[in-house]
Length: 352
Ligand SMILES: NC(=O)c1ccc[n+]([C@@H]2O[C@H](COP(=O)([O-])OP(=O)(O)OC[C@H]3O[C@@H](n4cnc5c(N)ncnc54)[C@H](O)[C@@H]3O)[C@@H](O)[C@H]2O)c1
Image (cartoon, rainbow, N blue to C red; front, side, top):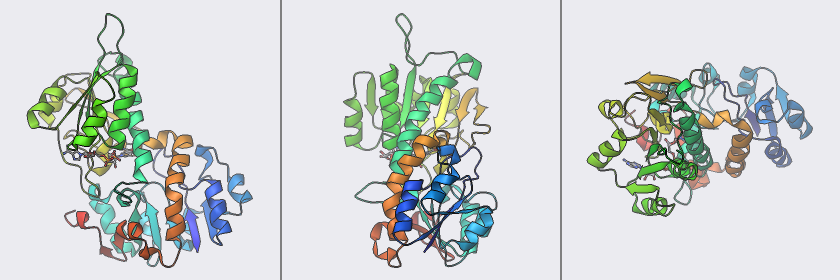
């Protein structure tokens, strides 16, 4: 099997799907591995590291797509990439199709079989999404704390506070992988946090972090009260495969007051806050209702040295299985198929 690892072309995306060590194991399995020139550089892996383990470096991205039977990449096909996909080929990457009807049409037209990292379920969890969500959760607090600084357009607040100066108030929507990571880091920084989730077990785990964390069920009134008093609002809810539920309206964002900050991690699934829209690291923020918004859809792309290793470790066993002719016998892979040779397969996408 020819396995292609293209260089990511989404603006300022530095991750690579498979690091050289993983490619080495695929070569030892008997596969031919094609790697886009420069694909690993931003993650600390020069072209020579791929060549040394027996991968073939490919200059032209279009040529890599033409040759590969299986394309493994990080972000959804971007720019011209969907035009290069073809029938009989497998694509394995983040797709987030519920937020992107245009990409759905382009994938259907291409005839490719596309499996999404974020819809691969195993033992009741999403093993490929989880480490990226944990990174995004921590980044949401790091970035949110910085956006609260006055020179960044924020209200001029040190999130963790100080003796004689109250800490900032953080509201986190969702206590899954991203939300819990955000709560833990915000708590360690000294902020006051209110976290919402539907799942009582997750609320209990958040409550155990310490007295600075309040965990609540998302009743409309409770949400409204907490968000109205928040300096930093972080969106991190997920209904797997589906568009994110809208939990916070524009007037509720306006009530946060000028210079407050919104980081909607769930923007890749359409966002859980009405004022959210997708951005890239090239122009990551915008103002809505006087509130600074951050809507980058590939947050871990900013820390490729960390994220590529973590992603590859969770991805590799599935790539190895997907490279086999009988891959559909593995229920987790069969269930991760979103689009199959011109057919929309994932039930949650039927309404897109
Ligand atoms: N922007 C980025 O770069 C980036 C990176 C990684 C993950 N993400 C996104 O972050 C989001 C969260 O991912 P995750 O891995 O943490 O998911 P997760 O499944 O681990 O957690 C989601 C949580 O949301 C809760 N939830 C669902 N509906 C809710 C509701 N109506 N009210 C309150 N809570 C609700 C669930 O109970 C669950 O605990 C996803 O959309 C994911 O795609 C974005």
